Image (cartoon, rainbow, N blue to C red; front, side, top):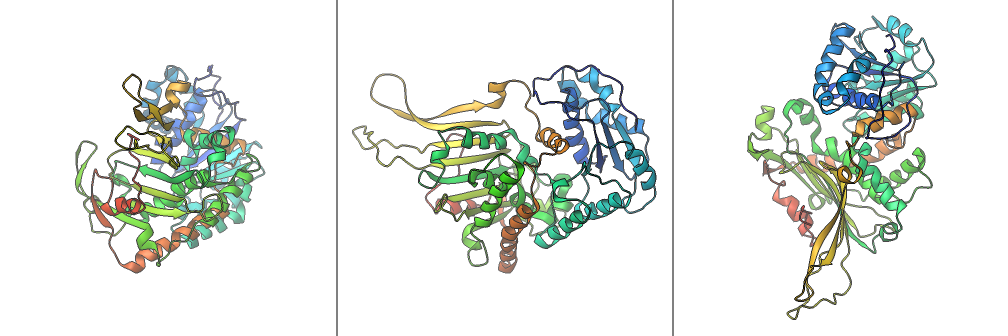
Length: 504
């Protein structure tokens, strides 16, 4: 694992963050899809930006035999599109590849570990172990790292979701990690929390006098959180059928977004102050059990239809067998505290929906009395909405009632004030993994889940799953390319509301 040669790099327009200290990043599962599609491109962008300094090392671990050069060839191929999109990509790629090395290790066998440990522990520096492997291997890797003396004061471990398939299995994983790592060394990653819009929510709420005084039940009618995908399960069918939309998306991504919307102002931006505030939200959620699950939740599964401009098979056809795993979930949540009493939070997520989009929609209450009368009755006033787009184009939109210009009477229209991050700030927007990996090296846990957060989330999710199992009802079918089962529309329309559409 030799240091890379000196490469001249200039600052990128993406960001101006300070350079990271020299570090070792070891990726278990270094030949897998996550490493090739997300982690290595994110690291390359940070190298391109000058944040990863010479002397840092990136080590890929997998079971198959290959040399450093063979691994670098594969990474070069994986980065081809990224390099082509960057003006300086080709000239700095070799310098980045020189940081990479490859080690063959069987995680279940001690062979090779002593040599690997001796090679890695030459210097006392920040050492990050990224477990891009299945959760059943987390404990195995943790025990090996401990047995070979690889855990020190500056060591961090990063674990990917899913963290278990229920509260009990999540606790077992956390217990295994906790035996060898301190809680301050464990980084439970949720890439949604690294998105620019998610972090901007904190800035909007607590950095502007306009919003925080209105951020409560007296002024907010309801909140919608949507994470929609056009794709099916594709290569993840085996994993997804054991998980389903509730565990794959709601338990982590959507609940974390709900927490950031609903949390009380933290005492500071320190990691524990932020996570304390989120934990209070999770503990204040109204339980959904067998008594009310039928009224508050909808689960669906897509059938054959049209998506992404082509005919697509149903979930059962993709899986190769019948299944009662849900590919769509909609639910109504309530935060039982003074700030949010009576304000519903509508969550929905699904696969094979009409468009790929993730957004948070905060709908404010109507004005108490309309003074606008066109002679035939009051003009309909649409409520103000604050829309935070997480993907595909990150930004913020505030919907307002505004006068239509021109003579001929006072005509009003619901129009958006749009802030596109790409247009407002220019340049490429950093990927969530770029930010999160940098925070791991710095030792900043603000955007990572603490153990008690994970436990509280499962304590709310597990009774929902139990209620579905007790009901013995199959997921409601919906045609691929639609917005889920009709019951999801009824869930919100029973309350006199509708799901947000792009037109306001």
